[in-house]
Amino acid sequence: MLPEAATRVLGYFTLVNHRIIDEELPESVARELKVHNLRGGAPAVLIAQLGVDLNYRAHGLGTFLLKRALLESFQVAERVGGVAVLVDAIDQRRVKWYERNADFRALREGGTRLMLPMKTLAKAIG
Image 1 (tube, rainbow, N blue to C red):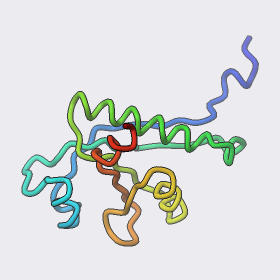
Image 2: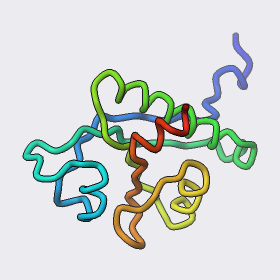
Image 3: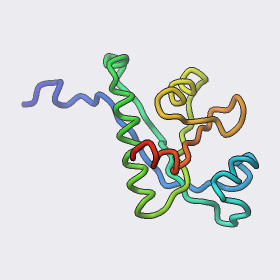
Image 4: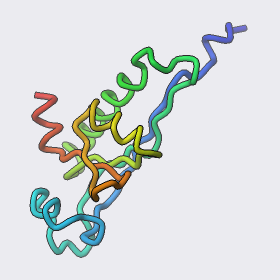
């Protein structure tokens, strides 16, 4: 029998293939990503879930998981394409966390859907 610590989930993330359609992008972002007038949308990776056990918050696990999710997003985009990583923050406090930890920015002012262009991520990864 395994000890409880060996079976407890401390954190997780989920990545999902996504497509960005023109209607969801401000004009300036569409120009930056070069995704104007795409009928089928532009490929992206959505971090659909990212969570940490309440007992392990403030220990850096969330930041570690975010960095791992971004690395995997980049690897996926290299293989199948992708212009950005998206995330839907659950509130403005989380928006600030994503902006601080990974250079995400809101698609719309005050919004909670955030984007990190893949070319920005590529530069950060080196």
